[in-house]
Structures are given as C-alpha cells and as structure tokens.
Length: 235
Image (cartoon, rainbow, N blue to C red; front, side, top):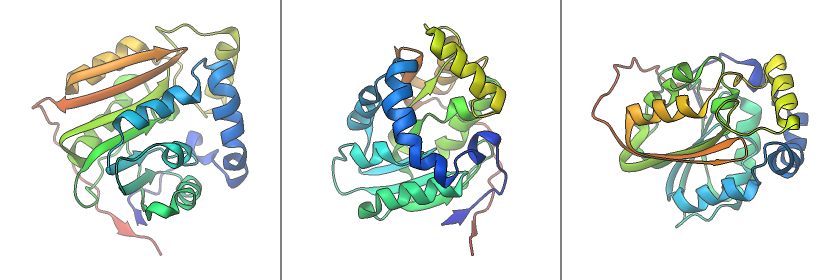
C-alpha cells in the first residue's frame, strides 16, 4: 500500500468498520432505489459497460461494484481512497484479483502508480468531497496523468440541483451535508457537465433520479501544470 496524504475529511472519517459493515444494506439496497431513485443495478451497468482489464477505482466504498461487475479479462486492479478502512474492506472483498491499494487525497495532485489505466471509476466520490463543483473537478485533472491513451473515466454522483429530488432525498441530503458526510449542497447538473466538457471531447451524462451517471473520454489537449506528491511506503 502506498501513502500520499495523511489528510482526512469528515466524509471519509465516517467510514469506520461498523459503517462499512452496514453500507451495502443502507446505501445500495435502501437509499439508492428508495431515496435517490437510482437502482444500484443502473450504476453496476456502467461498470459492466466501461470497466477494463486495467482499471483504477477511486473512492472504493466496500468494493461491491468491483465484486459484482463483469471484467473483460483477468484484470490489473488498483484501489485508491483516502480512508484506510475502505481500502482494506474493498481489497479483502476483491482479493481474488490481487488488487493494488493506494492511499491518496485526490483533491491534491496524485503521483502515477505504475502504468496508466484504461479505465478509472469515480463512483459516489464527488458528492462526498468538500467545496463546489469547479473545485471538486480538480479530481479530473489529477486523474488525467493516470489515464492511458484511449482510456475512459466513468462514475456516478448525487446532485442537488438540476435534477428531480423526492422529499426524502431533500431531507436526507440536507442531513448528510450538515454532518459533513456529503458536500453537494450546490452540486448541479449544469456545473458537472461544464467541468467535464472543459476537459473531455466526449462526455455522456445520464440522470437517474437525482444521480448523474457520467462517462468521459478523449481528453482535450489542455493540461494544467500539476505538482506531483511523491508516494511513500506505509509501515
């Protein structure tokens, strides 16, 4: 496991072993279909469509999607997260793939970890990050050096604006934002689309409930100057 940042955010520190033990039931079986109105199967579908045999997953949760998706071949799989508990949980779940694990704060520049990846997944990551959408979009800039030519970035994020939210979604989202679990109070569909199209020539966004499923490829020629943070080995 490599370490790039010791920083922690409230949204990440909530992922204790106890929380991870109930995550699949609470989020995947209840909140996704009943509150966010986006069945977990819809998110799994973008994995089945776009995951490659050389894949990096960022913001890994419990590893459920990686455990259930259909890889096209025996994969090289890498996991990246700020939370050690989530990394351990996901790595154990998909240990049959012998995953690499990397601890990193993706709001900061990320040092490449071996060869670039043909696919990078960012599922339920953006809405947990602090700040507005333009600030969070730095994640895309930091992923570009890790993306192989012809590669694809895909994922899902829960939005507060530009989507239809049920009363339950409004209330639960407000609660999560107050607690610092979410940071998406101003996240909008228009801003997500704008930030992706600044960086990629090919962008597809499908809205299901209040969840945006996005796929982006063909990065534009513009590259911000990024100062990479050297990785260190954990003890």
